[in-house]
Image (cartoon, rainbow over all chains, first blue to last red; front, side, top):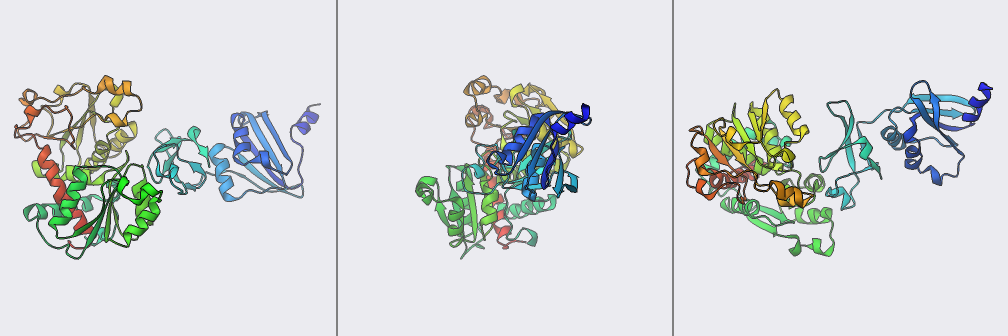
Length: 155
Length: 306
C-alpha cells in the first residue's frame, strides 16, 4: 500500500527535469518564475509531500525541458535548497543542488522605486552577498540598496 | 596620481585611503593658490537634473578659477530630458562636447550607470539618496585642516543618521582613519545597522546617544545634519523629530578648544544663528573648501595635477 502511494506522488518522466526539495511554501513561486503556466509540456506539481530533509517539500517535474543557467539562477534564488535532476530516456543523467551565483543580471527587479533601473531601459544587475547572520541578500549594482530574498520580484 | 586619471568618482569607496589623501593634498595646493589656469582649452559638462546651489556653483567656480569652460544645464526643464531623452543618450551626446561630466540626478544609481556608458570620466555630484562623494571629500578636507590630521578623531554626528547620505559616506571614509564615532539621533533616525557594521568591521568603536549635550565635551568635530523632510515616507514621522536637536552657542562652553562645528548645509534651524560668530563654527569655511576639493578632483581626473 505504501509503495503505491509513493508511485502516485511522483509519476516518472522519460525526458526532462525534476526540481526536487523545494520548500513547500516556495513551490508555486518556482512554478511562476519559470512561466510554467504557459508551458506546452507536461508539468507535474506536488506540494506538502513528506520529506526527511525538509519535513514537507514541493516537487515539479517538467517533461521535455532542460534549464539554462539564468533559469537555474532564478530557481536558486526562489528555492535555495532545491535539487535539479535531469532525466534522459528514463535515466538520471545529472543530479545536483542548485547553487546561488555571485551575481545575477536581468533576473530580478530592484525593489527601490527610485532606482534608475525602474525608470529607464537598463538591465538590472545584483551582487549576491551574505549578511552577518548568513542570510542571502541582493545588492543592486546601481543604487547600492540591498534586499532580502523574500523581497525578490523576478523580471 | 596617474591612478585617478580618467577614472570616474561615483562613491567614496571607489577611492583608497591613499587616493583620498592625494586629493586632499592637491586641494591644499589650490587653497594656497586657487587661480591656476591649467584647465584652459578644457570643457567640463555640468549636468544638474535637479536644482542645487552649493554643489553646482562650487563646481562651476572651481572650473572657472582653473580657466576652463562649462557647458550644461541647471535643471532638467532646460534639457532634452523634457522631450523624453534617456540618460544614456544625454550622456553619450554630452561626452562629445566635453572632457569630463559632473552630474547630479534625482535617481539612485544614475551616476554608476552614467559612468559605465560614458567615454569620458563622470564625477557624481549626488545621485538621489545614494551617494555624494565630493561632499565627503570636502568634509574630510575640513576635518584634516582644522585638526591637523584625519587620524584618531572623535567625531559626533548629530541628527538624521538614518537617511543622511553624507553621514553614511563620512562614516565609511572616517573608518579608514581610526575614528571614534559618537552618534546622536532620535530613536527613529539611528544609524542603519549595515553602516554600524562597517565601523565594527574596521575594528572601531561607536557610541549612541539621544542627548546632544552629552557628546559636546567629548568631540573634536560635531557634524550637524538637517533632518530632511523630503527623505521621510511618512510626514507624521518628520513632524515628530524635526526640531529634535538645536545647537546653541551657550551649549558650546564646555567643548574642547580644538572642536569645530561642521554642517553640509543648507541649515534650517538645527544650528542657532548665535553659533555663527563663535570661532568654533566652521560650516561656511567648510563650504568654501568645496571649491578647492573640486578643483583638485577635476585636475587629478584630467591628469593635470600629480
